[in-house]
Image 1 (tube, rainbow, N blue to C red):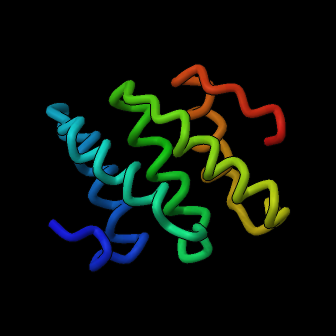
Image 2 (image 1 turned 120 degrees about the vertical axis):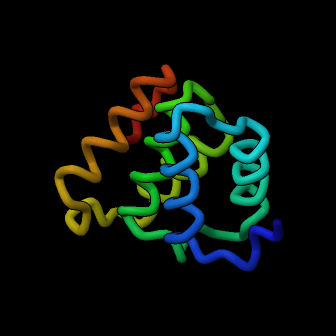
Image 3 (image 1 turned 180 degrees about the vertical axis):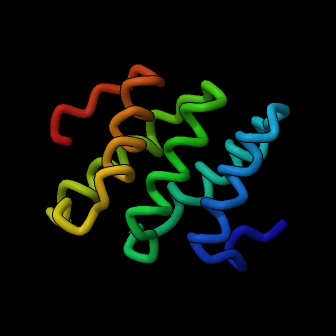
Length: 106
């Protein structure tokens, strides 16, 4: 599967669904994390996509420190938390806590 062909919303939905089925595929999560790390920026991802992606990683207990750092840095640099819905913020913060990834900047 070529992840470059998927938009962020589809990608986040696939991760969320994979985490919900109860039989996650860690290799897929690794592949997505590597894909996102290679992106120049995360500007195509909206708050819901970040919430779904991070929730999925935390749900299956699959920490990806580099990915979590990249997302946190993106959120902080863009300083647009006022555009996030309360549920999106809650899911994002829960995910960081669940995988034990401190991000004091958030």
